[in-house]
Length: 485
Image (cartoon, rainbow, N blue to C red; front, side, top):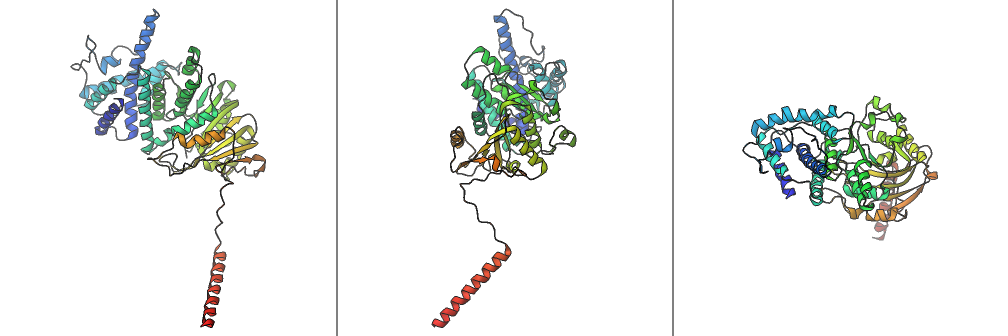
């Protein structure tokens, strides 16, 4: 039922003149979906307060609650279709009254950026309603009203469908791809890092919060089921930052659908923050991230870092090393050119990583892992606090060309996970002694010693000499035939 509902909403948005891409579809669905979720949250909190004999003050005032404007109800609790706004009246209310009211929560709750009130203000001060037709919006509201967040199975289905929409958004091109990392890869990264209850998990380039959502699922599955552990997961475990407005909104909504009521995601440019003011209390035990490919940062942002470079991913890697606790574990996706670039910044950053962290594993990903992004990537697994002595490499080869119709799956990574646990050498894996690296370049290139090296290309002089030798052999053979005749 839920899947058909999302398809119906997409069909309506496709017809509307204001939404013209997958990015718009998920952004517009998200702001409506968030308010439907908020209605469910208010209802649950009201019921809990009644059970405890306490008064409850709703987050939203009368007139702006879901059943006041989106789907008004009759006295018997059924939808009051006769008095429900539609057409221009509905769009005017949303644009001129609802969004400004919700945006005001940002200032009102400025002292508590982790509260649901602040999240409301942040979302509705950054997003805008792009659904131009009030008749289309009325249909969407009715469809979303049919969605329920009550049962765990329903929430699981909703989160799965939302993830599918995020994936489609990434496949649609433009800047959407930066928000989506294949979930099988994320799960494999988490399986290596093994976050534990009581540790804090951080992603400074959170995007759609896929790393945080999957880490939440992993930790729930592997922890002792207790009230305190559940509280820790809800309130004090998952932290993220995201620069892009749409990414922030999607990340918040995605975490909510995965069971985290008030996500600790902050809408900010992580790299613009003062890196040198990071202290022990700011650090995290676990970092999981895939910083954007190919981004460039301004000169003033680069001043925050000891190794100055315009490459966004390289700045993020410095940030992750600095904000990771001693003995903390990290898994970070980065372009494979990081391993071999010869510019001063790349060499300095590799040396910084090797000297301050144990880079114990490098996972080399095949081309096509990231749909729509023509880049080769590796995953760096490291622990902070001790220098690297040996690095184990694994070259992933699924045995097929990766693409939209045959994307990465969990089975593709099973052999990697099995061998990584013991750092086993094989045709696809090997160990490099860091002492053997060129100290001037610290080149960490992926060079599988089990793969025969291709013969080097010959120079033009060598080719010409070979041709002359072949001509001489031919002439000699012709002369021998003439003599025989």
